[in-house]
Image 1 (tube, rainbow, N blue to C red):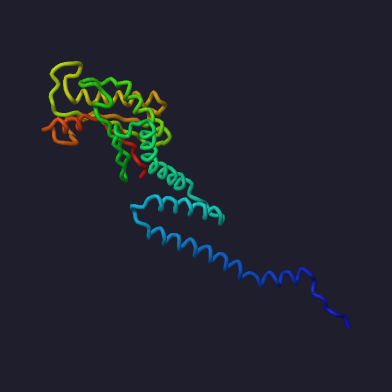
Image 2: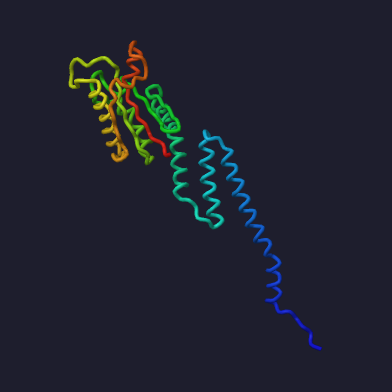
Length: 230
């Protein structure tokens, strides 16, 4: 009586069929991990943007690891936003190294990184030509801003004291000329002119009361804003 011996390929097929559950189980674990990561993203405070951006980058890496199509634009945006969050600290460090910390006021919020420089730092009274010291202050700022693709706005402001003589007839003209001087310098340092814009507000947007000398000094200023990615 012949003895039946199962073929080797038949044995392997039976073993593979028995292990199919592991494939389904692996997929289920992957989906659960992604699901909990999504839940974690909703638990992060909107003000804690750094954690959220790191989450976005991690999610993209997970999608790649499991054969999914990662959102390249989202990952790139997360990297740019992280650089935006760090640029203020880098400028502060540069100012400290050059012993210029007290010359620039830096303010960062969800929309922009704003640098405020007073007239005394940049210009002589009633003039729009940058002083040599002003270029020393602006150079490390430009070195950081040029690294990012973001738009940069330059705004000129003055106090409300009327101009009685000189090259410029009004405070409005003076503020626009000063903004243009800063833009020209930023362009000279290598910043793309396509992302630069300037405007002069004259005395119309004061930062302090014009009733005191201290207040008027605060109003005579240049504001450089790096617009953040939405």
